[in-house]
Length: 242
Image 1: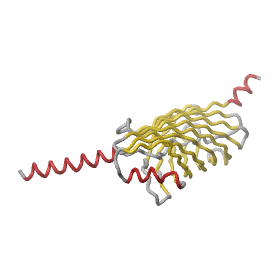
Image 2: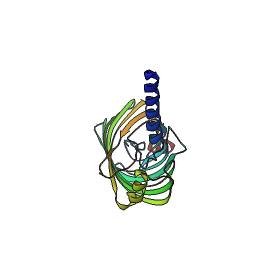
Image 3: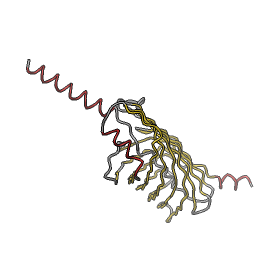
């Protein structure tokens, strides 16, 4: 009898824990990082991938032998209860890249992002817009067969609460009332690994979030993803057509 009572209590506590966590809306998540590791002028790179908490489309282009640009679209979802939390993020960036010898690569991009988050849970229904600026340095090794890069991305985020319909009083609602009164800062160390041959590679990436603010915020702390990464050397194609 005592055994059954203990099991019932354990199941009840576990159910409450799972329910409370599943009802949270993530107001920030580590998106798949755009790490092109460009080599020379007129390179076009693209990637399509899916992560633990998002899907992503990326592009990058080398304007000169040292200047590159990047564009990223990210679609976030909650893998445990997708009806509760979703969001979109669009980023554009411009940066500098450098190759040392043949295999070592360095690049740093600065950019702007705009997005929106939808939450619909036990506590409230919310719509939140956000603006972000980022600095994304990377150092890596790259070859025809294998790429490896480390990227400590730094991000500043400002929120704009568009809608907040309260269903239940909680600390979650206190967060909603105060989240647009300050900026939030994050550091996202990421590891990117690619394997394949020359122009087509399979990419694996792991990203972790280190929140720098003391203020509370519900957010996803890690993301890992797989992507198909394609490089198109436009310079070689145009030279061959001459």
